Length: 399
Picture 1 (tube, rainbow, N blue to C red):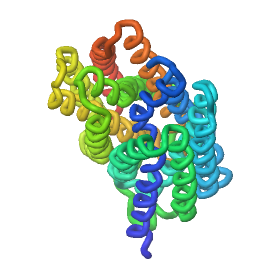
Picture 2 (picture 1 turned 180 degrees about the horizontal axis):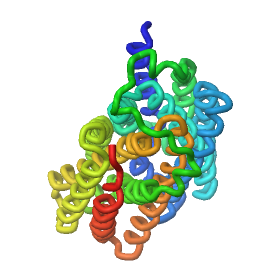
Picture 3 (picture 1 turned 180 degrees about the vertical axis):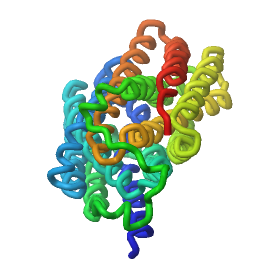
């Protein structure tokens, strides 16, 4: 198959793999059963989710180093083993701390390594469509809850929390390994041979050490952390807000989360395309405006406000998906392709910081005030900060 057409195979395989890896976005489905099983509160039930996302982000820079030595296929296979093992071992835990280790540390680290390898591979195969191709691949990650939330809900009802963890672990192990086998980097001459030499990709390659001296790195890092802080906070509370504030049943909440997953998935190619066309600044500003408007509406939400709940959380999940396409495309645009794997690994640490802040703050505010309504104030404040940073500091970039 000609390389230009054949490269789309990696997008398809990446989407299938990311459906498994993106099950973290269905975590709110597991929170109530986990709280009942271990007799814990909202803050503690968010710990596996938080540690998972921190490990997911923290492993990315190291995954970049491993990629250069071993190539994407071996790295993804090894990471897939960790993902499956982490989920499976979670089925044998007897307390929340044990699940923090099995699910958060083991499975989270595996997702971080595999995610980084897939994104780096796609980026190298699509120098002409960085944002769109990366976003389209990430569509699988965003749409994961559309598939996994109803599946997890059915398994939870049928066989309980711990058995569900075991079953999903075995499924993920085999799917990730099978989809990982064809992955490889293109030859260095690929870009010039296929005619991808024009002004849109003639970007200086900046090493990681040089990137740390560039103000654009810190501006992008902060904006990315704000985007993920709000998006992941919305993901972690979507289920409880539906049940506690909107008075939806567990099955109805699972259906709503599947709807949110569609927006999360669509946000990736949509914002990736917007970043390619409009640039990171305008796309970032649009994302923060959406967060502010959604948070304002949610502050006044009442019981049975199903439509308002559906619209606002759909938009928040859309923005989360958007930032997972904006950040990699912006990294390639600002700092080039040659050192992209390492560079994006360090940019992606913002995701872990945003995840940790979102999980801790949402859980603490719920435990202190007895409602999630106060979670939406930090959303507004942080998004306003994001607008200021994006407008004044990302504007220094010239194509």
